[in-house]
Amino acid sequence: MAKLALVYGVRLLPSEELESVGEASVVLKNGRKASVTMHLIEGSSEKEIRKQLLESLDAFFEFYPEI
Figure 1 (spheres, rainbow, N blue to C red):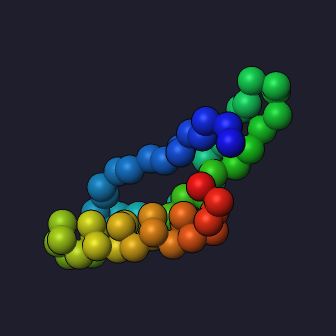
Figure 2: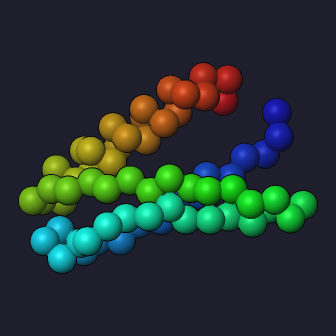
């Protein structure tokens, strides 16, 4: 299996100030473009946000059982 790269971004913002979340783009060395789906996790504490983030990561890797 090829060496893999997990692309992600993280930023904390006040949820009441957030208008929308779009997708991010990635350019591969061969010139092709790919999109990265952005996910929004809201919570009122670090513990709550961290729990949701870890659950989201676990679910992501369930899509790729061969890894």
